[in-house]
Length: 391
Ligand SMILES: [Zn+2]
Image (cartoon, rainbow, N blue to C red; front, side, top):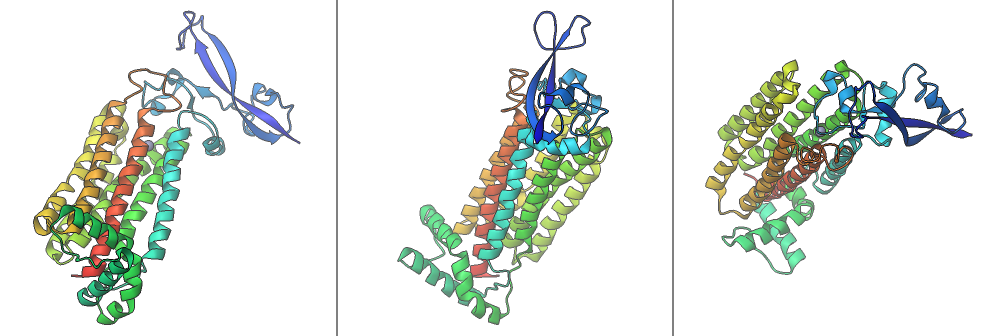
């Protein structure tokens, strides 16, 4: 019969009743935080009291306060409690299903990873990889698709903003219709619109979300694990930023190979440099939080150059307006995320109040997913645009 192992949260209370530790007069209270099925035992938490946790007899998996953490786990003094510290790998993995101050950080990006996996499968299913467009046959197919959907034939070029959005959204909904209709004819025409920039972005987003999730789950294991997973986390963020440029630059400048190569080369080299800088141990020091945020923000902000260039060249086109709108939304989400991450709001206002839920890093994660999704929508519009028009 399965019994229960009780993981305990240890809270040290000073004589004045406030949280904190280290005082010789402090007393320690233990409260059951969660229960976990295991073999043997009497179901009353006796195993934990004997010093066993999750199958290990030599150490206990308990949650500790900030002041009991080793230096390498001290990142945010405004989160004062519910830390895992130097847990065995197996227990750290299983703690994905327990309550501590990283639980929501793990799950926000793990769920985000599965959402992007589903979006990738949807995109691969709805937008055939082999679809190739010639401007004449695909334009005809698109017009057919729009007519079928709305009942009124729409002209793709439009100067009206509202009409532009309508047209672009209709085109978005009809990516698969147009592809299916135009596929054979377009393929026969011999023109091919590459899919790799769009999928590179989706892979970049999934890599970022998965590495972030793994980092939050496992970095508590040891100083070495913390170093490795934080680097993977930084590499994931860099990968997301770099691959975000790929659909924007590749499809916008499909007919301008010089600018295409210039922008793609610039962001790829910048990303490699950012990963190299992030390998330095000094990069993760808490006081360099603003420098980290600044580096990634500058990389992201450099995307303004190709976006402005796009508006100069294609400003009146509905696809350019719509994709720029999504890119501005993405930028706003990321900027809000960077600000929340750097200022550590709201926990700095009420330290300890947001340990488990509502602290800045969780908000940062949600904003990253929102920004990445906005960019995914922009990617669909780019595909629709170039499938219809080619170069
Ligand atoms: Zn994170």
